[in-house]
Each structure stands twice: as C-alpha cells, then as structure tokens.
Amino acid sequence: MIYDIGVVGLGVMGTNIAKNMSRNGFKVITFDFYDDVRENRMNELKEENVDIASSMEAFINSLKKPRNILLLVKAGEVTDMTIEQIAPYLVEGDTLIDGGNEQYENTRRRNLALTEKGINFIGMGVSGGEEGALNGPSLMPGGQQEAYDNVKDILEKIAAKADDGKPCVTYIGSDGSGHYVKMIHNGIEYADMELIAESYYFMKHGLNMSNDEMSAVFDEWNKGDLNSYLIEITARILEFKDDEGNYVLDLILDKAGQKGTGKWTGIEGLKLGIPLSLITDSVFVRCISSLVEERQLVSEAYTSPMKSISADDKASVLEDLKNALYISKLMSYSQGFRLLREASGIYDWNLKLGEISMIWRKGCIIRAQFLEEINRAYENAPNLSNLLLDDYFRNVVKSNHPSLRRIGILAIENEIPMPAFLSALSYFDSMKQERVSSNMIQAQRDYFGAHTYERIDQPGIFHTDWQ
Image 1 (tube, rainbow, N blue to C red):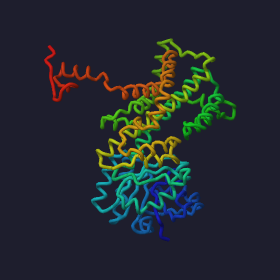
Image 2: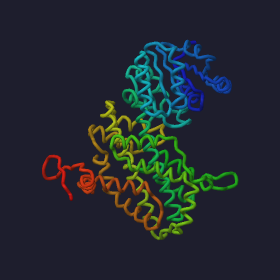
Image 3: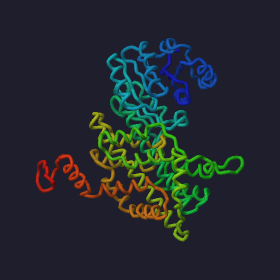
Image 4: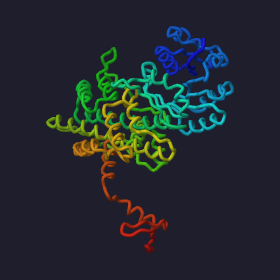
C-alpha cells in the first residue's frame, strides 16, 4: 500500500494525530524507533486503520512521493537525532514537519540546513493537547510555501473547525514562524491562566465564596464576553469532587509547573524590546509558586493575613472583577500581538495577524470569543501598531478600566496577591501617558556614564556636565 503521510513518534500526540488523519480519509503509516512502543500501539492503531512500519526503510518506501512526514517527538536533541536518522532516506522535494513544542531558533536552523539539501522543512505549532490532536487541533505551520501547499489538504481536514466551518490552520510564514506564533500563543496562555487563577483566589479569600458559588460565577461569565475554553474548564474544575466528596482543587499543591514556552516568550520580548510585562509576570508567579518551603518561612515571619471584603458589596465587586478580568485579558493579547508585529518585520515573515487570531478560535487552549474582534481590528487596519488603538478595544477599555482600578485597590488594601491584574493596570497606565518617568533615567545615565540624551525642544544628541 502507498500511504498519503507518515507519522514518526507514537506518544499520545503522534498516536492521536495519526488516528485523526485516518478518520479523515487519509492512508497513514507510522513508525517509532522503540520496538516496545510499536508493539504497544499495534492493536490500538489497527482499529483505526493506521499501520505501523517495522523499520525506517519500510516506512520511507511506503510513502507516496513527494513524501510528507510528520515528526511528533521530544523537542531539542531528540528531534535533531530523529532528523539525522530520516534525512538520508529523503530526496529533493520531500517534506519533514516538526509538530513538537520547539524553540523557533532551532526550527530556523533546521529549515536552513535541510533546504540546502533540497528537503522542505515545516515547523508547526500544535495546540489543543491530546484531545485536540484526536478531534481537531489549532495548527500553525511555518516553512516553504510549496511544502505547505503539499500538505494543506491534510492539515485543513484534521484541524479544528470554527463555528463558521473554517479550519483552524493557515500558512504562517517562512522558516521558524510557525513555532514562533505557537510560542506567543503559549505566552498569552500563561497570562490568561494566571488572571483566571487570581480571579478565583480573590473570590475565595476576598469574598469567602464556596467552590460551587465560584463555579456558578464562571459559568455565568462564560455566557458573555469572557466566553472561552479556560473559563469553561475553570467552572468544571471548581465543582469537581473525588469519590470521598472532597473538592479535588482544594487538595492540589499550589506549585505550578511549566515547560518553558512562557519563559521563551518573555526572553523574546526583552530581545526585541517589546513590553510583555503581563506575560512575564505570569511566568514569575509560577516561579514563586515553586518556592513552597520558602513561602512557608516568609508567611511565618510576616503575620499579616489576607482580609475579607464586606459581603454587602459582593454583587458590585463581582461585576468589577468580571470587567477587570476581561480588559486584563485584552492587555495580554495586545502585548502578544505587538510582539508578533515586531517579529514579523525583523524576521521578514509577513505575518497576517488577523488570520492568526482566527485559527485560535477553536482547538487551542486560548480559544475565546473576542478573537474575531482581533481579526476585525487587523482587517480594518492591517498596520495597526497596538490593539489598544482599535475602536472596539478602546471603547471596552475606556468603559472598564475603572473596574480594574477598584479591584486593584481592594487587592492591595486586603493584602490579596493579584500580580497579573496589577501588571495589566500598570501597562495600561504607562502606555496612555504621553510622557513617562524615563527622562529621569536618561538624566541619571548621562550623569554617571555620559550616555547622552535627546531633548523635546530641539533635535540632536546632548550631554550635560552635571557636576
């Protein structure tokens, strides 16, 4: 049999995407370098009409030409070793697709090296986890346009479908652009999750709400502008009990893990000089959470507990919290898309920011209702420098930023930690000032290091002998 596409790597993601492809009518051959993995997956994949090759040579020879091979193996060294094993079997025009959670600079390096041999290379961000892989992920492929055209039909069939029926996949751009966009997606995801977690924490400790009460609030929020996958699952998490009747959430250690993509996003913001304060603060909160023993010692040293807010104000406070959460989420998206805009020019990717927002509508973790508003903003103004300048977002922020201020004040007064909310407010307040405090910084730099400065009243570069 001649197969349409091959999948290398039979972990959960590789197995589920192979099943997805088969269910959509494609002939799929798979391979894994480990004999026991192939053996364990044999019956499961056979039921889905997916075959497993016994050797790399048999795998390669069974693919129709030009060959299209999807790699779903561990990022980094393992991906490099896998490519080294496969590349000798490939010929000009064949395409390798890396669907791992890879650092975009590695993807650029691999794309360049394989292109020199006439082999196409696509770095493809895949969002949605194992469920998305099976039932429809959001896909972000970057590489040669002709390589994408070869697999476009397959990717569009297996991708999640938005409510209008459009597949959640589009050609992103050249070399590492696909993995870059996935990185930004994950950075926004960090901020989104942190803001929701802080909302829960505020309700729990500031308003003394029960898990079922909080679940009902998130369910209600999910019916409006905050409609999103993360809001939906938060409501389900809050109400979930184990067999003994305990709320599982209350038993989970407050120590958040991370795989690095949020950190990569923050580093990229520093590299390109684009403020990602909300995203990087969300990464640092996870770092604080990991210091479990140290936090215990500090909490014992400072006996200043959180306080509760008057129950009489509960309804109005919840309304403020909802509005504050919404515009804080908008701030994280504005930061992420601002970085995408900058990277597009620097790396010559010509990213279509509106199209990117549209492929995040289904399948991915940050899927949300207002992504269509982001697309509309870039359709109306393709060169829009910041989403805060769009009419829709400007009206939303103008109407709701007083809510964010009130929540920030309550958090500070009652010693409830809400770093992401306060970061969103600081970003907004800084961005809306025609002049900020940095003239003092520049004066200090000139004082101790003769770094010079510019003036607001005349052109040129100046230095003052401050002493």
